[in-house]
Every structure is written in structure tokens, then in C-alpha cells.
Length: 417
Ligand SMILES: Cc1cc2nc3c(=O)[nH]c(=O)nc-3n(C[C@H](O)[C@H](O)[C@H](O)COP(=O)(O)OP(=O)(O)OC[C@H]3O[C@@H](n4cnc5c(N)ncnc54)[C@H](O)[C@@H]3O)c2cc1C
Image (cartoon, rainbow, N blue to C red; front, side, top):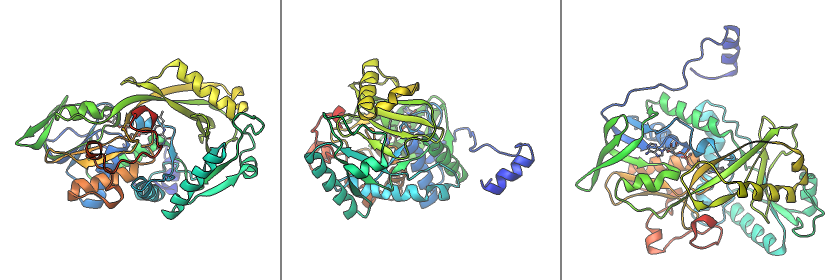
């Protein structure tokens, strides 16, 4: 069924009894051309683009829980292309362009809202860094505007401009940045892939990867063995565990990141805002909740829940930047498991095992990457060659040291990126 305003009207007049399932619930077939392990944003996008762009439709996405139950439905929904380093810059630019056509391509409203992002700066040094980043963004063909303090005050009047410890000097404004409703992205991609013939197998955990003579031949799952000529590992926070099934040791650490949402409020924050002197970023959802987050919990963990000291840390940063937030009541907090790489940049690559592909290392920035990652991963699987926008996301950079992309300049410590 094609979704449209006319369809809403038609269904509304007939008691909404005609809406079908958004995707099928197929039984696993004995073999596929491609198996994608992981039904998060990246896995679903990979399957969708394999079918949509390369005509490869004998594909299964294997998800151990339900579609969208991982980080794709747990993030703070920010979508942007404001990276500075070659490699990241062209990739996130590519991804943002795909976001801009995604709703039309999928015939699905993912509530992509280009409301603009403002990264605040609080010193001359930070202003220089912001100007450099803005120039890199413009060189890449994206948009960036350097705002002074008065322009910030006009656009973000609710911030505290009087505090003397970390005074707001200005901000780097990225108008095409914004948010998208995260679980709708998973549902839209799932529906799009399903319509093209991809089997989405939920409650199907991969427990082993079959390899014969140096080539992948299939996987073992909780729903039985399934054969495939090509297998893609796209499991975000579980990357090390799943890669270990193929005897690989990845340069990835898994850490928990928390997020928070308040009760619904009238519209008050109409951009995404990030604090330059504390790890705090905030936007307002279409339902009215203030959605915000901060730092990792700082120790490796596979628990999708966080600790109380980090809750306090994030609230303190929020109160420093915008004291009015203290009046809002917190509704919920949650955590997700981040696949942190040593340079903060991702991996989209082949492996030493023929037919086995790897997609991971998204740290806490992988939501905005969803279409770009799926598009480039599908290209790699279909053609055996890296897509030009993701050619620098090689696994061997952590072995050779060549081509590291340390966007934050924090060195090889996973939890600092
Ligand atoms: C609190 C928080 C805030 C964030 N904020 C942002 C943000 O604002 N902007 C941004 O760009 N990014 C953000 N991120 C990061 C972003 O959400 C992730 O980088 C991205 O979602 C990871 O890719 P994914 O969607 O494919 O992961 P997931 O949705 O986690 O998908 C991986 C899937 O693999 C499945 N899986 C694991 N093991 C197996 C197995 N053995 N067999 C079968 N399936 C398996 C899991 O169940 C899971 O569904 C945030 C993350 C969190 C947690």
C-alpha cells in the first residue's frame, strides 16, 4: 500500500480497517545471497540499498530482538554533516544528501526536520576551531555560518549569557542539520526493504559464523542454520562479540551512553544546541519533550542502561547552560551500547575472510550515518569495491596507523571520542 494523504482520508472513512502490516513475518529460507546480521538502522539501510540500488533481493536481515530495539531507537535523533576531516567530511555530506531524499524514496514520514544545529563556543580558541570546521564544511559543499554572541542571543534567548565562567562567545550554525524521528527511520527502512523482497527475520540471533576454506558459507542462528555466500556484520554495540564468532578481534570497545527526555512542553527550543564547555546537547521533540544527552558512562559495558553519577553530570551541564531546564520534570532516561573505535571514526570494509563484511565503530554518531552507511555498505557488498564516500573507513588503519581520522583530536582512547 502506498501511503498518502488520500489514503489517510480513505482509511479514516472506513474505520481504519484497511491498513496492512508494514512488513511481512517470513520464515527463514535455507539460503540467501546476502545475510545482514543486525536489524538496526545500518543493517536495514544496507538491505534496502542492496535491493533498491543493486537489484540484490535474495537478502535476509537477522535481528536477535525486534527491529528498531537497538541504538537506532535509542539515540537523541540528531542528523548533521558538520565534520572537518577528509574521510568523515565527504561521507557525512553524502549521508545528509540521502536523508534529504529519504522520505520520498521510502514513501514514509520519518519526520526529518532540518531545524538547524548550533555548536556553541566559549573562548577565542574554540572560535578558531569552529571557523576552521565551518570552512571545511563549506569546502565540502555543506552549509556553515559563524554566529557571534548577539546572533546567538537572538536565536537562543533562553541560554544563560551572564555566567562568567564559560561565557557564550558565539556558535557555528549548520542550517541543514536537525533531527528525525529515530524509530520511524527503522520502520520506514524495514518497510522499504520488505517491499523489495528482503526477508526481515526478527527473534533470530546469530550464534555462529560458518567458514570453510577461508570463505564464509553461512550462519548458525536460534532459528536454525542459514547458508549465504556473503555475510555482513552490522551489529553496532555487539560488533566485538559477533566478529569473535569469525575468530576476529576488533579494535572496538563497547560503552553505554544515556539519553533523557522531559515531560512535553510548549515549543521552546527550535534548534539543536550543543554546549562547548560541557558534554550536553539538546533539542525538542515534536511531542514537546526536551531530548538531551551528554557523556558516555566511561567504563566498557554491554548493559543498555546507565549509572546515576552520569545523570547528575548531564543535569549539571544542562543547568549551567540553560537554568530554565531546572523547571522541567524528567520523564525517562535510557541507555544504548556504543561501538567506540580508537579514532572515533567508523569501519566499512571487507575482512580477511572471503565474503565476510564489517560495518562498525560508529561511536555515538551513527544515527546520522544510517543512509550513508547502508548505501556505502551495499555498494561494497555488491561490487567488492569501497564506495568513494567511505573509502577511508578501512579496518587496517588501526594496524598500520595510516589514515587514522581522529576528528576530536583526543588520541587513541576509545571512550574520549
Ligand atoms: C543515547 C544515545 C544517543 C545517541 N545520539 C545520537 C545522535 O543524536 N545522532 C547520531 O548520529 N547518533 C546518535 N547515537 C548513535 C547511534 O544511535 C548509533 O551509532 C547507531 O544507531 C548504531 O547503528 P544501528 O542503528 O545499526 O545500531 P542498532 O540499532 O543497535 O542495531 C544493531 C542491531 O544488531 C542486533 N544484534 C546484535 N547482536 C546480534 C546477533 N548476534 N544476532 C542478530 N542480531 C544482533 C541488535 O539487537 C541491534 O538491533 C546515539 C546513541 C545512543 C545510545
